Amino acid sequence: MRTLALLFLIVLLASSTALAHGGPGNLLGIVKEVDENHMVVAARDGHEVTVQLTEKTSYEKASKPAGRQDVVSGARVSVKLEKDGKTAVIVKIGSQTR
Amino acid sequence: MTVSKSARYALVGALALLAIAAVLFVRLTRYGLSTHDEPTKAEVVLAGALRRWASPADLRDKKNPLPASPEVLVEARSHFADHCAVCHGNDGKGQTVFGQKLFPRAPDMTLDATQSLSDGELFAVIENGIRLTGMPGWGDGTAQTARGSWGLVHFVRNLSKLSEADLREMEKMNPMTAAQFEQMREEEAFLAGEAEPPESKPRSPRSPHGH
Image (cartoon, rainbow over all chains, first blue to last red; front, top):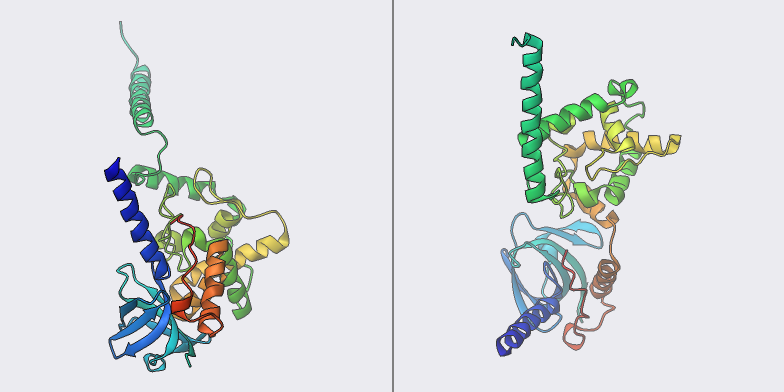
């Protein structure tokens, strides 16, 4: 019984952590650092997540195509991730934080 | 006692049918009507032949009467995103949760098996559906619906020409659950700077239904 309760707790904790990052495959947050291949995003729950940017990653700003150069530190972003949870498929770029 | 040649053929035929029925019976009782297995080659060939044979004769060789104007293609694309993509996928390759659970699986419509069908055969599939598959018949006998189906025939013909931008545009037209809609609104508000800063607002829990 105790083992079952422990297992339940582990599953609950694991799922709540995943949800805090915006659900599987999606990440909302603010760009802390960015270079050619990576960006570090402060997720909405305060965790920092390193996301890989590849040549297949596409960018969108105000519903229009954008580029890697539009991702700057302090920008709000929504990132659709690959199944690996690390590689960006689409980065939607929003307003700049003050 | 002599048995005539035709009686012998009939007997062999009856025994063969009995054997096939026995195999089908055993499979059915053992596996039920599960959709988990891939269709066998025999089933694929038989279903393909039956579909071709069952297409209405007046449609089989019919060319698409609707001109493939840019407006028609745009309209068909949004129609496909809204009605068809849930099984077929925006790119028509059938790699969706629903499409891959159907029996038979939703096909990759960019491939020859679909592209080799005539315009009329594609129209018949869209209008009338296909029994015992997941394909519904969308036609209601009106000219307006028929026009929509002919537009979809053009869309299917143009699947391989879809750009990344087209696919992204289609994603916005795909049906959404209430949770997905809420998520989209939340994302838009966040990107626009209308939502609270990340640290001060924990994300609201979503439905655990992970399909």
